[in-house]
Length: 288
Image 1 (cartoon, rainbow, N blue to C red):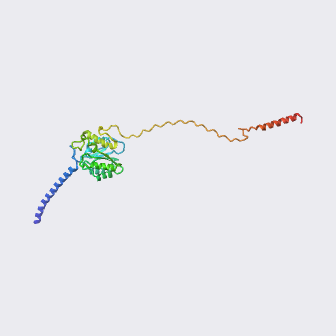
Image 2 (image 1 turned 45 degrees about the horizontal axis):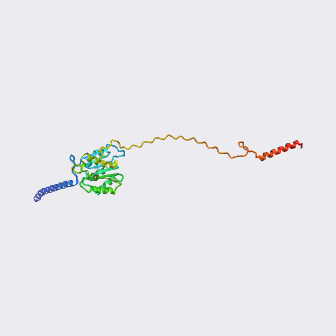
Image 3 (image 1 turned 180 degrees about the horizontal axis):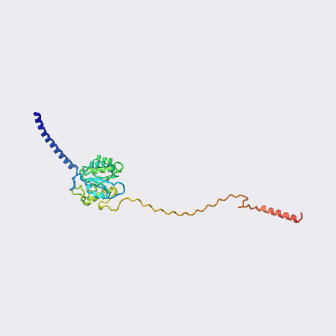
């Protein structure tokens, strides 16, 4: 009897205890979420994702990838127009981005632009993970967040870019945009209007297309950037060769008594023969 009464007393107590714990946990989660995740822009919700294929071919194999959070989400269309595959998710953290990259590791292109760190910042270990997932044969373009939840993240990314200059290209959005409040929405984090979207997209595109002016129009040129093979040079007509002069026949060695060059008797021998003939004629005339 006592045992059953004790059980009836413990069940309500346990329920109250669990209820208090659940409320405390929910409050803690809400607090942590507020501390580590930037408030999504109006009209969007955490987890909302956009995945756009490139709208132009750059003629260099697989399209470069840009992965990011809600800041990239706003610039997804112009990035696609530049030739990037874009994957952006509202409230995405660095850890979530690394998990996505690891799940698609085999299909990753040579150039990967990572625009994360606004939500919860980034740690040294996470950036090391990024480099590990990408491997030594891919290039990481790292975008510094502006007014993210962890103000130390931009400096950390700059330090890693200095440490790995052959593997990381720093796209310092934090410094570039610091003197341009007109590029932002009222929260100072998300992009505000065409000027901010254009500046952000141009910075990210510079990782592949070279430095560009943030004040340039957002829409890229319609001229294709596909690399065309070099036109073959016209073959030169064969140069007329001068007729070769036949070689002079080699001179035959001089041989005595030949028909082509008979020997001439020496002058003294001819004179001797003439003298003998005169003597013979003279003796015949004298009758001797």
